[in-house]
Image 1 (cartoon, rainbow, N blue to C red):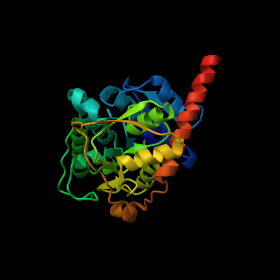
Image 2 (cartoon, rainbow, N blue to C red):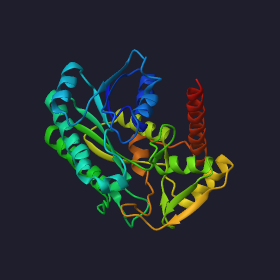
Image 3 (cartoon, rainbow, N blue to C red):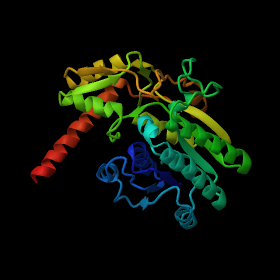
Length: 323
């Protein structure tokens, strides 16, 4: 199978690429190495794959119609996994136009190119943020109560609508996966779990916003499992939640981090931030029934793997510096 992964040098995309190579796929990664975090970290994400004979890295932008056309003309892709996007709620409040340009216009350009070259299958990486502060828990895919409260969330909702249109209008089989707070090795440094674990490990104060928040935290290996199973079942248009199925309070999260690191958190309490939803919790009924999706990594095990990765990165950096 010939697979294109947009955003494939990023956190989730690089793990998906590793998994697909093991499955025997030919993997093409398209990434523009956006400066939202360092190019060096993204190159570290993919260093184990770069020398694989079935791995192909293409540096480019999903908004560049000419570059996309050249890529699709050269390679007959069986499926596209679309993960390229500007991520993060808080940054989207500062730069809403950029998020619209990349996440909506870029997705439209990709979908148009797929239609133009007859590529019939797409997995779209959406987000639990599309639900907003929905009062109905756990969150179900068929809910009509979607309240995106940030530019990022709105772009993901609009991306789903574009996918629905292209599926209905042009017969492209598209599955949208709503990821719930992904974490794990290679996570972006702006994300809360990365920042919290680093602060606790280094005994620096960490800031938490609001007192009553809770999240469905999903380990990256479970996200990859959801994507790989969806690839085999793309048919028509569908939306599925990909989460852990557990709702964990912010205090529970920090307590588990303290146990994993054997360190005490130094907490600075701050008021709620605009754009942050209070609670997320994935109803997995549909993804379990239709995709045979089954999360397997507990929060404690996932945080331990994350902490071990952060520790190994620190050791690697120190050795590189000494050398």
